[in-house]
Image (cartoon, rainbow, N blue to C red; front, side):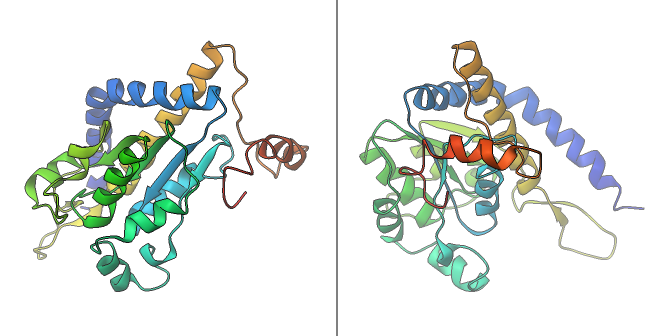
Length: 244
C-alpha cells in the first residue's frame, strides 16, 4: 500500500526539522518569552491554508493565552478559495490589515506562508518591521528558492524576516508519488508547521518558567474549573487580543 509510505516520509521530514531548526526555534522563543514577560503579546498571521497554523496557536488548551491571531476572512478559504488566492497577491492589502491588528512596537509577529513569495505575506513582513515589530517567518526555504518573488520589492518572506523557521517542505508541498498519476499527493506543510509552532510555544513556556514567571497557559474548558481559570487569565489580555 503506497499510502502508508506517507508515515515514513513524515518521520523523515520531522527528523530533518529537529536536526536543522532547533537553534532558530530557540532564538524565536527567546524573543517571544521576553515580550510576554513584559506584558506583551505574540501576533500571528497567515493566508490560505497557512492561516490554520495560526488557529493552532490561538485560544488553545495547553497553549499560550497572549496570542493575537490576525484573522482576515478574505484570505481564508471559506469566503471563496480562488478569491483568497487572488487577494494574497494584492499589493496594499497587508498594510490595511496590520493597521487594524493592534500591534505594538517591539512585539513579535509570526508570518506564515509556505512559499513566502506572494505580495501579502511579504508586505506584511515589511510593514511589521517598519512599525518596529520583530518578524518571525515560517516558510519553506526550498519552495521560496525555487519560485520567483511576486512582491514589487523583489523580496521573499525569508529575506525580510528577522528570524526564519524552515518547515523543510519540498517545492509543491505534496510528497508522495502514486503509480499512474503525474501529480504528487500528500501535502505536508500544515503537519510540519504545526509541529514547529508547538515546539516553539513549549520552548517559550520553558523560558518563562526558567525566568521565574508563571506562564499564562490555557486549560481545557472541558476540565473542572477550566472555564473559570481561563477567564481570569484572559482578563489580563483582552484589551490587546481580538476575539477573546
